[in-house]
Amino acid sequence: MAYLKLKGKKIHIKYYDKISGKHKEFSTGINATKEGWAEAKRLLKQFKQQEDLNEKYTEMVSSKILSEGIREFLEIKRLKPKTIEIYNTVRRILIDVCGDKNVKDYGQGDYKKILLFFDKKNYSRNTQGIYSSHMHTLFEYFKEMNYLQKNPIKVIKRQTKQPESIDDSDLQVILRHLYVKGKKEQYYLIMFLLITGFRISSALELRWENVDWENEFIVAPNVKKDRTFFFPITEDLKELLKQIGIKKEGKIFSYSRDGLKFYWRLQKQLLNNPNGSLIKKMYSMHQLRKTFITKLLEKGVPVHTVKALADHSNISTTINYYASVNVKKMKEELDRKGIFAGIFGGEIGGGKEIERTG
Image 1 (spheres, rainbow, N blue to C red):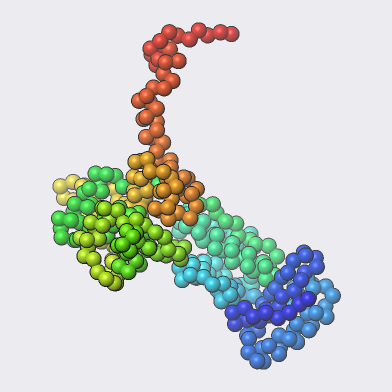
Image 2 (image 1 turned 60 degrees about the vertical axis):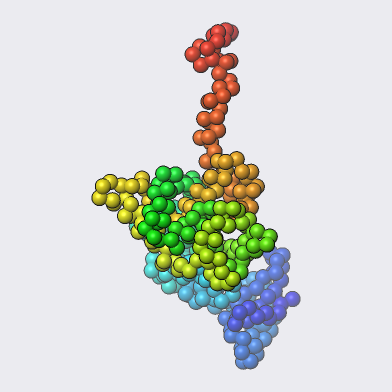
C-alpha cells in the first residue's frame, strides 16, 4: 500500500517494499501546493500501477545534485544551529574538493580526495572524525532515498584524549593575576567553572532565576543535550555567588563567546613575561572542567557521584575519560604499602631467596 506523506515542504511517497520486507519512502521533489498535491497524486497512481516497486522507484527518483540533496536533508531533519553549521561546512568541503555533482556519481575516488584534503589542511584526528561522521550520515540519507546505491564515506575513528587537568601551581598564578589586577568579573567566571565543572555553554546561559536558595541547588541548563540538571550549592559556591552579587533575575555571567578570549590573552602574557615565564603552558577554558572532575576523583568521590555532578550522559564517559587519572595515585599507594614485597626475597623483600625448582 503506497500513499502520499508530507515532510517539511516536500511531498513524499511511502510504500511497502516486498523485496526488503520494509516500509520505505522517497521525496517526489514536489512542493506541497494545491497544484503540487494534484501532480503528486498522478505520480502515486503511476507508482501503484507498477508491479516491480523497486524498479519503478529507481526510475521515478530524479537525479539529485549534492547541494540540492543537502538542502532537502536540512529541511527534513530537525537539527540544532550548531549541527547545521557543521553540515554547511561539510557541504563546502564536498563541493570544493569533489564538485557539486549528482549524488550517485560520488564514489571511493571522492573519499580519497577528501582524505587528502584533510591531510593538506592538517586537521586533527578528532576534526576528521567529526566531518567524516556527518558526511557518512548525509550519504546514508541519500542511500535511503535511493539517490545512490553505496555510501562512499567511511567514518574516521576519533582519538580518545587523556584528560589533562591544569597544573596546581599554574592555576594559582592564573587566579592570582585575575584577582589582583582587578579583573573581578573574569576571576568570578573562572572560579565558577573551576568549582562547579560546568560546561562553558551552560555557565553562560545560567540565570539567577535558576538558583533555588531554599533547597540549595541550581537547575542548570545543559545546552549540549538540550536538557537541565541539578547542581548543589556548596558552601564555596554560595560564597562565590555572594561575591558576584546576588540578583533576582538576569544572567549571572554576561560574556559572549568572543568575550572569553581574555583567558587566552592572560596566559600569553604570563608565558611571555619579561622576567621569565610564570606558567608552564597554555590551558583551554574547558580544562577547568577537567580539573574539577579530576580533583573529585583524586579525593575519592564515588564515580557515580562524579557522573551526576559532571552531568555525563553515560557512566562510561566518567570512567573511560577520567578514572585513569588515579592510576599514578594507586601505583604510589601500592609501592608505599609493599604488599607483595616479602614474597620475592633478595633486595625487594629482604627475606630469603625463594628456592627454585625444576
